[in-house]
Length: 138
Image 1 (cartoon, rainbow, N blue to C red):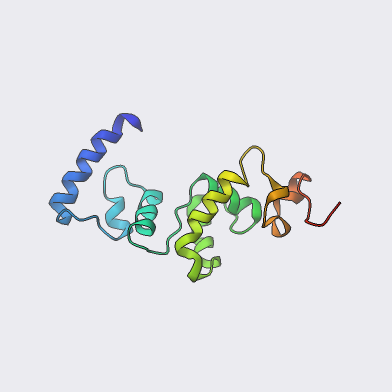
Image 2 (cartoon, rainbow, N blue to C red):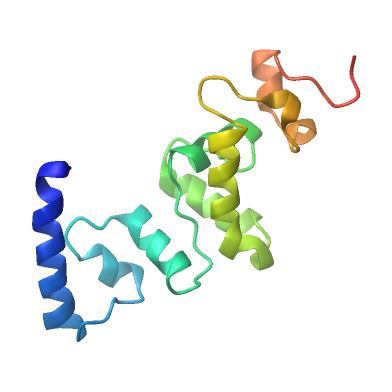
């Protein structure tokens, strides 16, 4: 990745000038046609720069979605599709940021902090590990 990043940036700048009048395109298809831009990056740009209700599924969102049962799936596109159906429209713009933060700081990969988790009572992960406690249990 680091070997091609500089080259991709230069090629992308040329394409933005030549094919898009110096503007960043606002469709996933046009963004993914740029060198080094895949589905996740396109979704981040659409969500963050243009306010589109997209879901950029990264490792954190993938883990949280599968552990909680919110949107289980074996590939990111499946998880993304399920999240777009299940997350209420009024929360879609911000949900991908919330899920990333939850995955980074609470539902961590190696040592999830189930006891501090606000969604733990609804989570399916505790049943698999036996480590989580339902709030109020002693």
